[in-house]
Image (tube, rainbow, N blue to C red; front, side, top):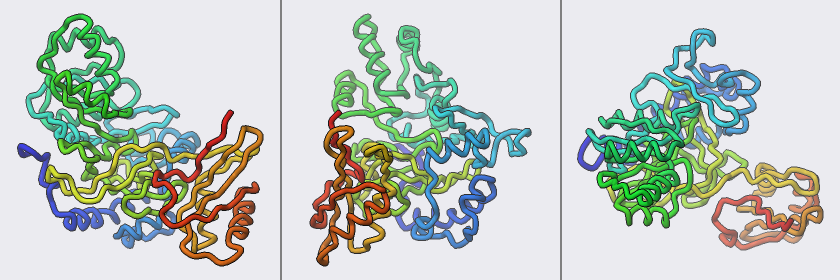
Length: 415
């Protein structure tokens, strides 16, 4: 660790990083194929040939909903984990967690298994700091994620967990922590309670915040009280994905993941700057998730971080990719819109707008096209009906005219 960077990986050249990650990719695919779950998902795939982003993009995306279904059919990990315990015939895990669903996640023995040390360091955490960790230590992995990262830096951790606001505030007042890890909303509650009780927290000056939205207004509210809060973005399945730095220009991607932004409902990467679903491949043989669809929306930012970190950046959380709508009793999902577009190669982006009132639904598919032959709108409408089994209008639009917000289905209906 240096004064400004967690390690040399953060400042290596983009070419060096890409080469290293792509060299590790075939090993990761092979490790995944060694599990029962991915052996089925990646059947017939030559792992050695998956050595480029183009090759990676040809593999199927496994989304959280599918993981939940597979785990329900084959407890506890759906066959996707290489670690567990003796009864499962797997190498031993250190811990196992349960997230809502329920979905079970293993924790391996590697130091800072979830890789959150990098995010905490970027938030100003340093060796010798006392960290008040208010993420849950019960069932879900969030508390363990932050604790592992703090220990990797050399911090001492107070395992506050969730709830018991007055007891946690008493601990803060007594112990005077340097840093906080947890949700932004709980930190605000704690600081408001401290103000109400007249309890000073003069040492609390930095925070790594996650688990929910962290709007600029709350960032400024914390700053006015002397606390610099920085956002981290991760999931219980893949660990850290990206983190905020002092530059406050998007979130820098973690060094242990390969991130793609794909069109919702598909596995097709979108151009840089376009909003889509965050898909993560984790370079971790213990729980070798390959092309895991998080369901979160974001977009890649151009350029690199002013702090000297050279990895790509994303804009942060921009909504959810699951835009399924029920129209006239039938479910319509983004994958169906993508299927319509694929049948007409001359089309660009598409956006299905559902309007009207419930029980009187109207569907209009807006599609971008540079030049079109007579009858294209009617042909696309016929395809839309064939794919969705529902009738809808088609509106042809100029390239670049549809909003860049990642929405493939927009529900404008009134109740």
